[in-house]
Image 1 (cartoon, rainbow, N blue to C red):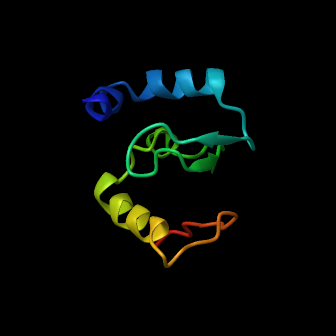
Image 2 (tube, rainbow, N blue to C red):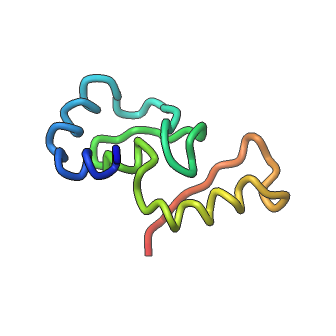
Image 3 (spheres, one colour):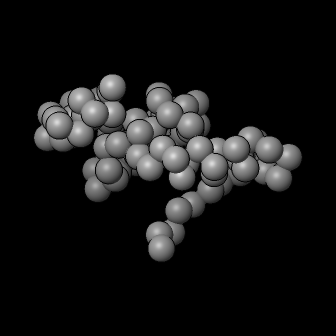
Length: 83
C-alpha cells in the first residue's frame, strides 16, 4: 500500500526526504526486507531505496543471506555496484 502511494507521488516523496535526510549521513531503513539496516543518503539515491521499498523481491533474498551465518560481521559493509 505505502509503496503504491509513493510511486504515484514521486516528486512529493523526494521533497519530503529532502526535508529530513542530509547528504552523507547514515539513516535507518524503515520498511521492507532491510528494515533496521542503515544506508548513507545521497540525493541521487532512489527514494524507494532509502525507505526500503526498492526491488523488494530481490532485496528479500539478499537480506536472508546477510542475516544468515554467511555474513556474521556486525561491522560489515555491503555495496551494490550495479549490473
